Amino acid sequence: MKKLLRFFNEVSKLKEAKRRKWLANQIPNPETTASHIFRLAIMAWILGKKKKLSRKRLIKLALVHDLPEVYAFDFTPYDPLLPRNLSKYEKVKPVLEKWPQLYLSQKRKKTKAKWREEYTGMKKLTSYLSPALGKEMMELWLEFKRGLTKEARFVWQLDKLETFLQAMEYWEKYKKINLKVWTRWIKECLDDSLLLEFEGIIESKFLKKKPVSGNSLSSSLNFFVKIGELKTMVRKGWILRGITQGSTVSEDSFLLAVAVWVLGSKKKELDLEKMLKMSLSFELCKVYTKDRTPYENILPKRKVQRDAVLGKWPKFTEEEKEKRFLEDYAAEERALKKLLFGISSGDKMLIINLWDECKRKLSKEGRFVSQVYWLMLFFQAFNYWVLDSAFPILAWWQQMERFIAEPLCKMLLDILADEFEILKFRPTFKKRFSFFFRRVVFENFRKLV
Amino acid sequence: MSQPRRFYLTKQGLKWVKKEYQRLMKMYQAQKKEAPQFLHSDELDAEYISFQENEEYLEGRLRELENILKHASIIKAPPKKERDKVQLGARVTVEVDNEIDEFTIVGTVEANPSAGKISNESPVGKAILNHKVGDEVIVQSPSKTVYKIKQIKY
Image (cartoon, rainbow over all chains, first blue to last red; front, side, top):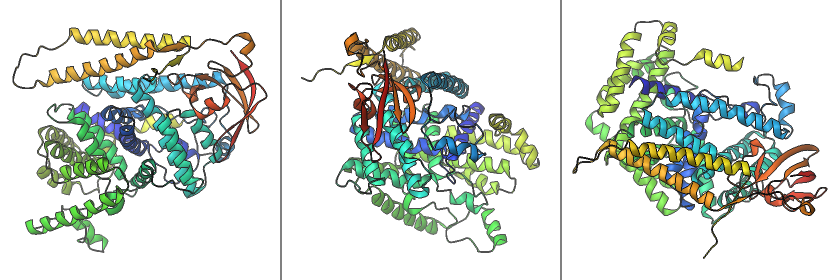
């Protein structure tokens, strides 16, 4: 079980991994690899339906495709022309102004180097899982890389298309992207008829400013653009506790989906495909409701008083809890309906039902996902406490002891409890270096050098 | 009835698909040997279900590879008199915006632009197919990229 926590800790590094192509382009607060995977998984789910491909496999392929980046270098089309250290912009800028001109031999060499790094990374990462699950993830990743199935080829091209969509969004917002290079690049990457049509719709929306209407693909595009907002939506709970660069809703949804897959694989009586979709869509409503915390409307303005309130989990009477839940429920339902406007009625109904099942814990899958959701949020909070002792972790502990009842989640919580007992009296700097699944500072340092 | 889709592969690509097929088949057979006994008649055995799922997954992938191998067409260099045109398997050098770039035109299975392999069904692949050295080809997009073919090799 300790290995499982180590796995989650390693994968959660992707929540902090800002994508190198955007850093090179000087995009402020760019998306992370975790956020990219989140939107890709949803795009694979929604667009894969139109191709009649296995949705479960598409989502799994999307979730594993960039996992090796926990350890491997994040190659961009401009590598190896770009300096590894991007801080010297005067060296980066001239490279980005032109198409990354590489000879075939250089391209092959780069592909080999990327493969080697990623293969080693994936081997290391899957070693923290049970042999069966580790093998499954490794095989899926190989399937993606080799592109020998319809699903793998589809996700491979969609991966490029999601990146292209992000590039268009950044271009519209910051005008820092070299448009000509990107529109040329995407035309070399795609050959799937549906994705080519979708790419045309993206160009019409962003470049010709003529959105295609009355087309189901254009409604899907509007939906994907809206959920892209979750990539930068930092959880309010972290901001209130002084963590301004905390994890975003999309990053947490990505980790939730991975955790549900890993933990759910031990629960054969549960429908994994349903749970994966549930984890990806559970927080979509936040596009409109924004992230809310149990402290809504009860936090005092003065910092001292506010910190005192945050030190405890808020307590409400049963009537108040009921009222707050119903208010939340109605707001989220409205938000989801607004967000899903124009999406096919089948997908719309499915997403609303999945959210409802999880929100009201109406099914065994809904109850399981809800438990893993709280466990992973707590896991993130625990990490923040390791980094800063001032983080009010006790309030979280008190609440988790009430929330977490599912045996598997409870076991993981117990391991964290043991760790908490060891670490709680240690000063912060000692905690960081003794925490058994700490962030590997030196590993990142080595990469930079 | 529609014709089954053909998969264009280079010799190397075909070898690679066959190798992958053999690797998966070996894995599949090894797993068959390790199959757990399904003795509990009434309740679902988690290990057995997991085994079945894995078996189905491998069977699906093997079927897909069999389909590729069944409908594979080897990319051969065209006859000498036709080698002045871009066809499947051609190594093409192009000039775009005063910069030189090179890539090989392959079938969809082997396509990987960052490794210099462009699908014949991609907009760029489609646009330059059957063109000759000196031709200028426009790939439609808002910026209308012009590919000038400088060299074709087989």
